[in-house]
Image (tube, rainbow over all chains, first blue to last red; front, side, top):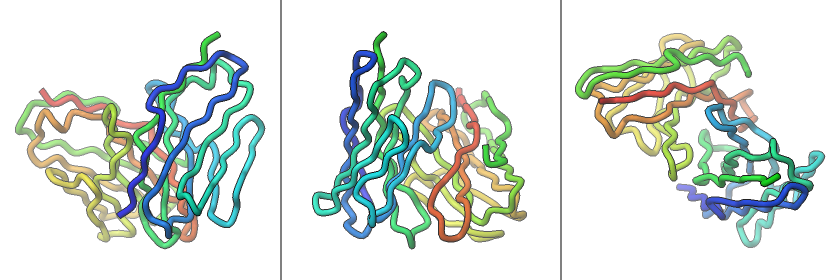
Length: 112
Length: 113
């Protein structure tokens, strides 16, 4: 089955700086890669996703890049703000599969 | 919130007792999932359902059973709760037949003493 590894497990940045979280996946057939944000005590919420026919996708201050050859994808957050502090999860899936496989999460702390 | 609710939201129980958690959706989506979330492990799939009476095991299914007798309800049962099943349990739904995106319910915090 699919295996997703996520790094780093914790990340602290100064407000206004950029943050990058990286994930690698094992199944080269995977073609859907969502990112979730989970605030303390809340449910995970989808913030952005990318499919394998696209190399990069942006939504305001967040972007995701995908390198299919290397089997890794990354979340980029620019101009970080305190409200970006949360746990971020990456995931991977085959479009024909019924399951998402999640990374273990990154605790992002934005320091004021 | 994709019309997903979970009940109860919090539960404390004793080792050896059966526990049932309920996930309810209002939009007739076909796929429903149960995950558990533990520190350092992210979200791990317990069981999922792809239709009424159609279920399959996930990564960490031992000690859990599920049932789906109606489209809108997906039940997770801990047949004999153990302390290792203390966790936060999330239900999720998958929107559409060709869409892989999953949306999560609010979660249930379970403490097994």
